[in-house]
Length: 327
Image (cartoon, rainbow, N blue to C red; front, side):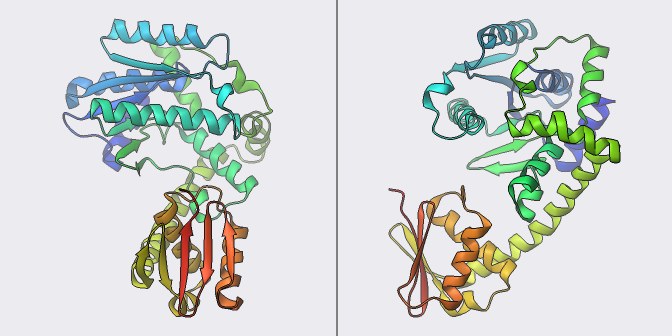
């Protein structure tokens, strides 16, 4: 069952090809261990080169033991294993979850450069997708956030693939039991001080009591939102190219009159694209910021400006100047 869905997802989204080199993010939990074994079952057919990556956050007493556990499995399976340790708590400036995620991804990028492998497989599944959609709805989001995460996505110069995206958690657990594959359990996943855990432990069971297929329905919502967003985003990117006038240092100019004539949905996306161009990302840019920018563009006086996280936007006579404040 798992192998069939895994194979169908790979074909549907063209996730891997013959002789691909792929790095797998493996924590030691059930999902990532299943991902490792699933890929090994396809290794010969696709002539794959597989490298296992493990980031040890050193947040729990069991962290070193889990790293040794995965290292032994990879040694027994003749899979290259690369790990890194970092006590994430010492570097905490943001939420612990976000800091850990950033360090882990930096490690993945470093390994990608060193090994010259541009594809990373992660074990996110359908339940993870449902949790992500709910989490973003609770925090506030638009179409982009409702997409959750995609089966295939570009990040800088690497491709992230998620071949388990059509599998539910229970299917993975059942498959591991059937194959008699052992794994580690992270006790912190039961701590409801983290929003994602609270959603998984408390909210999702209540929603399942109302609709037993809620995980699939939320997955459908993510997929449909993704299709709509892709259309709007591609249209918005064309509008951005039409309105972009020139770059200037750490900023760029957009045509003022053209911006003023955009539909609000396209306006928001054009502004986001412009911010990403000059800042490198749209992190911490919320709907309230975009609302403020639109008010500035439509009603603000010349030379009026608005500050966003890491960005300043100034309205001039015939143009809008968007500049990064990050050196």
